[in-house]
Image (cartoon, rainbow, N blue to C red; front, side, top):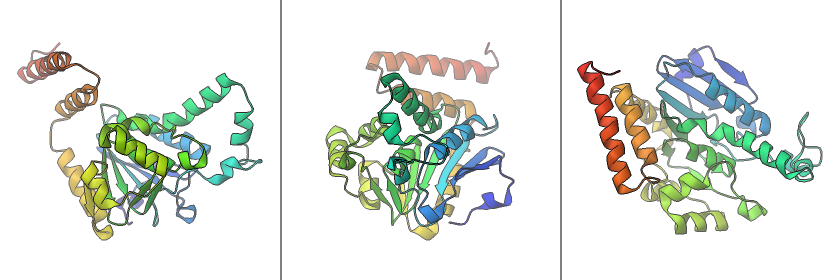
Length: 267
């Protein structure tokens, strides 16, 4: 995928992650196509750092992967006895204490959580394979635009594990419990047509139209006033956890803030 981000100086460029910023739009790119953008703890730390480095001017964050695959998931080197250079292997982590293991997984999860912040809208442009951790990274974003060759799959259960990188909550929210269970337990591929039909993807387009479609979507997302977008995202994100009456109250409170702001009487 070609991208205008290559014309920008990167804010961050390490461990398979590049962050560029162009005014209100930031682009986070997975940059190891030779390994199909396989993920590692170092990559997760770089993703977390990218979130922390976002300037306040950014309203939309685009997530993409170089090469034919968005991300083929966890680098299997993590399960080798030697692990990665300078990193404990997953086998070593399993032999440690419960608190240490929990803290380590929580640290990994941070790479997948900041995309949901109310002050930004995140869009994943997904082509080719998005497997396991790759699938969960796409699910971390607010919106997903996929190429017609996309192949989502949640393979953790097939390996004797569970999806633990924050993907289960959005997956159930998007496709429902029964389909989410079936996708996870069977580990099967979900293609572009099914992704759109079930709500996993907002749009599916031919691969050569993916970049242009994401650019058009970004322009549309930037059209509305920022504060209204932030309030709307917060309302929608919290809707499932609120009762109907609590949601009504949240709408009133948010609208009150917007009206006071527009009238110039906000505190």
